[in-house]
Length: 340
Image (cartoon, rainbow, N blue to C red; front, top):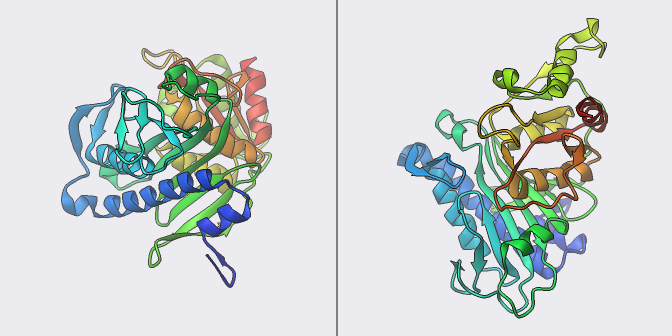
């Protein structure tokens, strides 16, 4: 609703011309985020901050909150008739949605359902035990002609070129939703007494140039020459080729490091590594690289996988890993030239 100068998420979606189906999906993600925020807030008291004793499809140890958050998102999305399928970091297979009966991996597509939601239910889960930054990342894809057939992975890969919305919910001192459904990026804050996300900034813009970088320095020995050159030039400061001093930030959660780009500018780098299991990168394309790229580009920034753009790339697996560079346009293009 709109009250004085207060605009909530539902009203904003309507004012931006979002379709009823897309609005329902985003509102479902928002409700899931509110529930996850409450669950994370009480996790320490309930003893849910540790490992669950399971390994996900990525080969990573799952935390209790990983599993709980995944179930919450699936439950909310399953109630959206236009959601045909879901891709989650925590599920190895494509999840098809049967309206009214939750998720099922063997049912045919709902009649009229033509959206896929790809999501990381709890980005930064390694930060849970230290009470640090965590969040939820999501992407909404528009399927092509899928009438009278069961959806397959190939339909999802092709739909990567038809991303219509992307966002993340950041569980920090404030619970924030950063969202795009078109050409701009807006930020909302959770008003807990009403359980509504309220618009706090209608246009986020990333500075074209900045003096801050975000990278895991402990992997320096595994970097290629382009990454090494860029970071060494930054570390050289005013006496080096860049002629200015840089700050380094690294949170251990993609969502926090990317959020900083919208507030302070800079560059986020998670490159391919000369290290077993990370040769093609670490971050997953469908529910990490792709949604963040849409957000960053719609805020005037750049988003690449070394020399090629993230937007326009078509994956060949649900959990495909890629190198990721996001941030201020001038910095991203400089690093692209070094990769070239």
